[in-house]
Amino acid sequence: MVDIAIVDYGMGNLRSVQQAVRKVAPQASIAVTGEAGIIAAAGRVVFPGQGAAPDCMREIRSRGLDKVIADVVGEGKPFLGICMGLQVLFEHSEEGDTPCLGLFAGPVKRFASGLRDAQGNKLKVPHMGWNQVHHGEHVLWDGIAQDARFYFVHSYHVQPRDAGLVQATSDYPQPFVCAVARDNLFAVQFHPEKSAAAGLRLLQNFINWNPV
Amino acid sequence: MLAKRIIPCLDVTAGRVVKGVSFVELRDAGDPVEIARRYDEQGADELTFLDITASSDDRGIIFRIIEQVAEQVFIPLTVGGGVREVQDVRNLLNAGADKVSINTSAVVNPQLVADAAARYGSQCIVVAIDAKQVAPGRWEVFTHGGRKATGLDTVEWAKKMQGLGAGEILLTSMDQDGQKRGFDLALTRAVTDALEIPVIASGGVGNLQHLADGVKIGGADAVLAASIFHFGEYTVLQAKQFMAQQGIEVRL
Image (cartoon, rainbow over all chains, first blue to last red):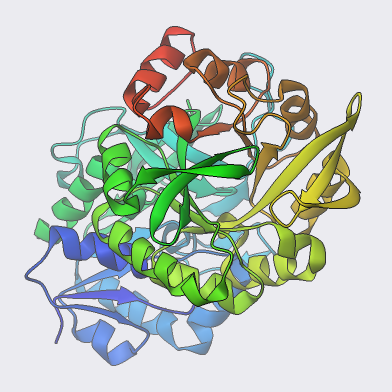
């Protein structure tokens, strides 16, 4: 049994996530794996993902990972979703009209195109780069300054039906949700593995997290 | 709000960072891993590595460099140079790159951009364009390190790349590159206004005002520079402080 399983379903590059987790947990055993048995037995689970929602969901389902994800979340295992690993936890994504895992109620919507900033410059989609994160009170934010910047790259954002689950928002230009949590489940839109010191701190906090 | 990004660029050959003037006359700037670590400490928002190695024998060197950098530096890493097929994209991502930059091969085989974006996601596909002014308000795309004219119009080409799935455009002015007179601001403005995806301005930075102008006048989403950082004229932090004073949103 491994301490930390990083779920690999063939979508995107997991090496950065693995490197960053190793950096904050040098003693831990880490598996990058698509095997349900290893994920089910792991101490905690990191669920990353890149690419398009239809491809992600197809790969998750074809590997039978939808069930193991629901199981480990239900068992109370510490679980961290990153980027697409946040979006697919919701009910439905506008990207390719894709039904998702439904662990959180609410849709995933695209940023509107043609938006402009205060200077009149186009706001590009994907939303790419370092943006400020306005966060609430949660042990995973320990030691992270209010409005710290994290690295984002995405064109869609989640809209949880239950506002009580929101753990952080960012602005582009309107506020959007960039972190949600419920019990043992925490998920973020940005990439902590690419967010320098603030990102490593969040990963460190996740490794130390023992949700009750 | 979203910060404008400052991206130091490391041109790498034979395991060393070098810098040329208008694509020739190379000057040694040091060890890539050491330089990457220094720029990260100074607050660089991303790093771009361009493998300018001519011979395919030395291609392995860039992989070892990226592996070492990725173990120590936790910001996005873009790698380009010699990417010809989807397998090259895969190999660079596996070595630790977060984004792969495609230049000449996008012109030779545009389907590569579509295939790589479909397989690995648009977020990791950067199309690099080397552009040269050929008439007022018109810039032509060049390939093969700026040696070969393509007849393609830069704005039209950038739109086509966006349509095929590029997540970002790295736009270099060949006229300005290495000249230290500032970006080609008209080129930058023309491309960024035509696109929905982010544009990185490149080529010609000689002082900090040039970086600010790239954002404020050129409308760039990110600015890339090499020699002003490599040879100790300015640190990345100084560049960010200067831009912040000019009212530009940066990560400090």
